[in-house]
Image (cartoon, rainbow, N blue to C red):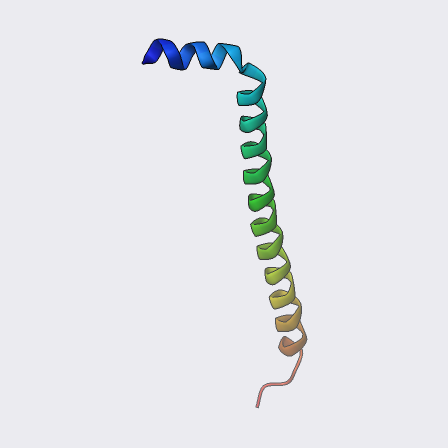
Length: 58
């Protein structure tokens, strides 16, 4: 069984490289999206809080 798997991996090396590259790109896209979302959310929260910090306290 192991021999067959290794033979197929050698025969279709480009297919495995392309699949690995697609997985890496997809994971990077998800991570980038989550980081960007968190950054924008924190920026909006900080900006809104700064506006209300300037108000006088009762």
